[in-house]
Length: 162
Image (cartoon, rainbow, N blue to C red; front, top):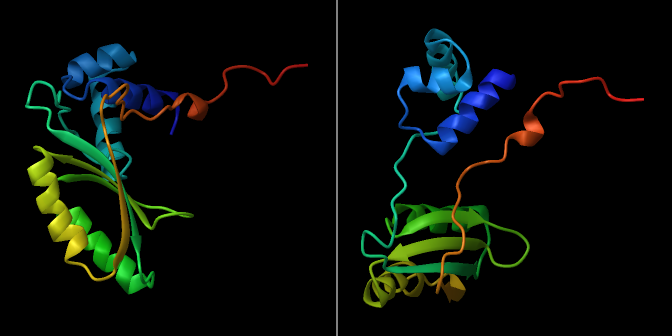
């Protein structure tokens, strides 16, 4: 990736709803170049998908929890089975396998405590392999920014120095 690709990615991370003409203008490139490069970045999997980020306060907020899950047996098949069940749950927004510590960290958003309790029953209680669950409930979202910092990837624009 070169500086133009990185500029396009930074702009798209800020606002993926821009038309190709607006994107090209902000990236200081031609519309044809912007379109060709964005298509290539999508084809290569650099751009996974384009989504709309919703404000939880305007759609009913609900309950957000960060949940640590430790399994009793950590064989590859057991980890895979739990992961498949977790990612199938719409309330699970993020699922991370982590080490050391718990086996998984989940970010869960549900309509409220009753919906969270139903998720607990489906995902944790009914699975005999879940040994421990520790949930942290959000009381305030101080920051949420899904953008990646691409500054370190930019090619240097000068000589290395003295």
